[in-house]
Length: 386
Ligand SMILES: NC(=O)c1ccc[n+]([C@@H]2O[C@H](COP(=O)([O-])OP(=O)(O)OC[C@H]3O[C@@H](n4cnc5c(N)ncnc54)[C@H](OP(=O)(O)O)[C@@H]3O)[C@@H](O)[C@H]2O)c1
Image (cartoon, rainbow, N blue to C red):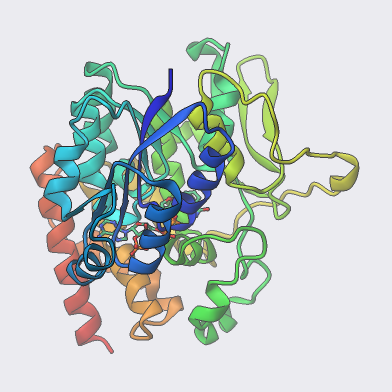
């Protein structure tokens, strides 16, 4: 029987690749729902090509454009987050792929868990913000969360068949991004075009900037903590510029398991879509002979201060990871808008971590309130200090 699938954030980098993957498996998936925010043109062409039952647009101008151009379509076009959440309740949808970027992914994730959906999770910010709340909720609702992030997919695959108490540590690999070999003095000159030009991965704008500042790795560290139930001291990061090994797990007997493949996000997307099975045909074949250079180095946490801040937020816990994520989300947006320099992203994050109210045992409402207050205060800080 076909799986009823929803792809949230279908107009993004992960969303478009997910659509490519499912088009290779027409007998496996029935596309019930797609959602986009501002990219009306792309959503229109996706509706025409994939004919989902529903499409939701969360930005009003884009919604008007799409609904006007598609009167008479077999796809039901709806506006706004409330409608999106309601649609996630329908029985025909059993799997929800969440590829919305940032804080906006949190509510759909929680709602999907509450309605017992199988979750394929690309959005990392939601687990960073509220992983301590989300993972027990998923357990209570008997809900599987399958990671799409390549590092977490690698760890997930390495852990299959292993006993939990034999896991010693996980090692997340990081390519190091476009500024790995930049002197820190040159960080002042970094413009958005350079930060968006990742040497290996082609991704959405926020995750590209996060990769350049290594905040992406910091967010992934916190994501790994909750996904795999780890203690902070069980998580390590190592630079591996070739991005061939996507992450590793070390066991109590000293053995290391790693997952290797081409740097192609369609592979972890395909893995998550097929889990617990493996796809019987491949998108690309990895060759060791073509990838003989595998190098590793320690991360310079003075140069990439965001990573140190993320470890700090994870160790202190409470609402601090939510503060880190919110301040970073604003800083990245303002950097892309040309209003905040790249080298000052960690300054804003640290300022918010030091001065927002720390709550050691937040409930769900606290995560929302913390994030919204930190958005507003981060914007005010930027206005005052530029
Ligand atoms: N790209 C990768 O290779 C990659 C790898 C691992 C993990 N991830 C994670 O996956 C998530 C998505 O990344 P991406 O690179 O695909 O991002 P992206 O290309 O920027 O796409 C983001 C998607 O979210 C939608 N969106 C933006 N703001 C929204 C809002 N307020 N409400 C609802 N939808 C909204 C966008 O719609 P419009 O475009 O229509 O505005 C788009 O569909 C991120 O959390 C990222 O860290 C990405």
